[in-house]
Amino acid sequence: MNKTFNLPVVRYFRSGLPLQRLPLQFWAIFLILMSGGIGLVSTNWLLVLPKSPQCSRVFWPVASASMRLYCAQLSAEEKTVDGLLRAINLLAALPKDHPLAVEVNRNIETWATDLLDLAEDYFQKGLLEEAIAAAEKIPDHVQAYDLVEERINAWRGLWQEGETIYAEVEADLRNSRWNSAFRNAVRLLNLDNVFWATTKYDQAIRNIQIAQEESSKLDNAYRILRRGGADNWLKAIEDAAKIPKDSYAYQEAQKLIAQAVDKLTGSIETMIERQDWQTLNNTLSRLPESYFPAQDLNDWQILATAGLEAQMGTVEGLGLAITTAEKLTDSNSPYYNLAQELVKDWRREETALQQLAQARNTAEIGTISALNEAIAQAKLITKDNPRHQEASRDIANWTERIQIDEDRPILRQARQLAAAGNLEQAIQQAERIVAGRALHSEARQSINQWQATIQRRTDQPILDQAIALANAKNYEAAISTARQIERNRALSGEARLQISRWQGEINAQNNLKRAQEMASSRTVDSLGQAVQLIRQVPRSTDAGGQRLQLVNNWSYQILSLAQEQARAGNYQQAIRALQQIPAESAAYGSAQNFLQEWRSFSQPSPLPITP
Image 1: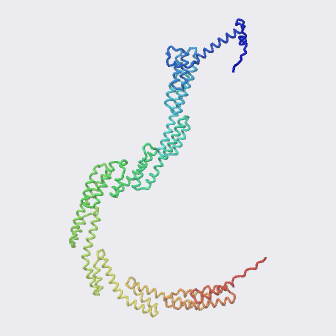
Image 2: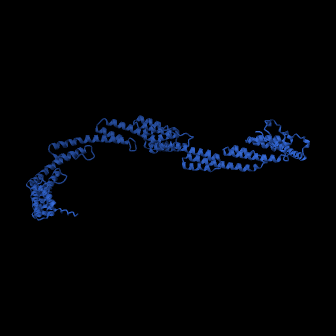
């Protein structure tokens, strides 16, 4: 779009009139505007020069101030440490009284502040050393320099605080203190630094999650450890050893391994104390050698091997055990003295085996004198010798053989006397075999049989007499006679059995008599009591034969009395009477019929329902 200008001067030129005819006021205004415009354009050209790629070729000792200002502005626009420093240094070389000093100083202060801000940006991004290096390059003649030392000290203090907090988080993680680690991580958010409050905080949280995941891998190992036993302890070590050194759970895994190693060491000490060499050898073959002292492993293996050789129970095995144990030569070893004691015991055991072998060879002759000689040889093995129990068993066997050989003729002669009927003499002969001898139990059994035979011969007439009295129904006399047979005699058990049976007959007769006396009153209560008493009499007794007859008789009497009560209208008393008739009575069926009938009579009639 074309614009139309209607200014007076323009209209004048368009009119075609000559310039000489222009008014003086016009030329005065024109000169003023021209001089001001030229000054303004010159200053602007000096301050804002067009970009030129020639700054790198300038020889600065002879360069003009405008060129320095121009190139400094170009360098400052890079917004880098080096660019800002180049810009400051270019203008700092100008004299302080230069006509452009005000503009130069203003730019230098601005760029120094930008440089400090750039250093602060480095610090916020986590580049502490770069931030300090950038800040320290600020010239000391600018105002921003006064803030450099204070700013650097603040950075270092804050950075040190961040490192301390982060180190505490790491320490917490390596010791499985999850809550403390999280609390310390949150402290990073309070730091006036973007890098620590974001990047390092996020990293700390991730590390907490990683540490918890790694620690959870040890949970199963801890459960196995708590079960106890060498197998579980070895498995716990195996699982914990899989945790790498760079893992947060590594220290925890090492603690678990240390606990398992301590438990295994204690278990091994117990095996050695109990001389359980086979279990010890099996355990040693499975131990991870890297977790146990090499000297202890060597000593344990020597003891286990020597112990197994000694357990062969032969002279050759003991010789091998002694040779093996003597390899433990380090007097500083905690097992040195034990090895020496074992060697001493095995030497004595070796000697005892030789003595025992000689005694057994002597005992094979089989004569009493040879057996006595073998016993004397075996007794040379003292109580503190490991083979003493074995020697004692052989001595006991040989002693028993001697006693049997000595006492068998005595017992044989006693049996011959018993077979001839001389029981008293047979007992006297057998009693020569005293307690503690090999054939004492056998002799005692024969003596008891012979004494029982004698007692039966003595007590059988008494028992027969008592039975005869009982057959005559004289139970009191029968009991008195049977009690003459004392306890612990051959027939005492049979006598006591008969006495119990006869006493039962007496008790049955007494109950029968009492029941008859009760029934003589002929009342419902007395008859009911008589029925109950007679029912206690056993059927197997003599009195038991009258039991059913009397129960029937007395039950019918009760039934008759109940009918009298019913006829008088006393149904409740009649019913109570019938309830005393037992089921075994012949009157029981009639009584039940009457009960059903009388109960309907005794129930009250229902009241009439009123509308």
